[in-house]
Image (tube, rainbow, N blue to C red; front, side, top):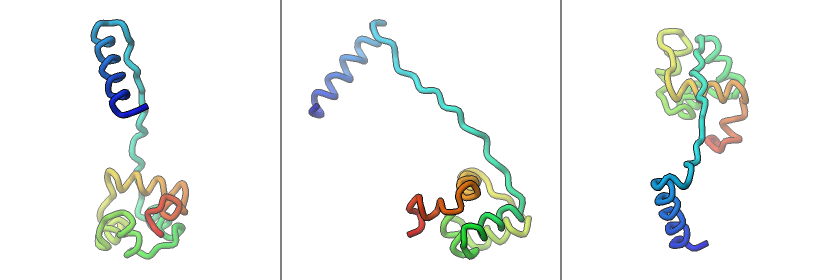
Length: 102
């Protein structure tokens, strides 16, 4: 289907929805809470992934000082870093299989 046809169909569906003749499609997502990590867990994840602190920092998009602080317990990861740590803990090959590390 051409772009114009897709656009036309979408507009027709929007009109029908507004008239009450078409039910909207709904998607419900459940987002799991962030995991928390101890300093030893972070180091274990890094070691199992086969990375130095410098490589791990680049992979996570943080500084080496940040990784050092996490591993010494002076600071704790938050947000997206926790998601990446969870993915890497589940699959130590995730950095490679995801294409982040080549």
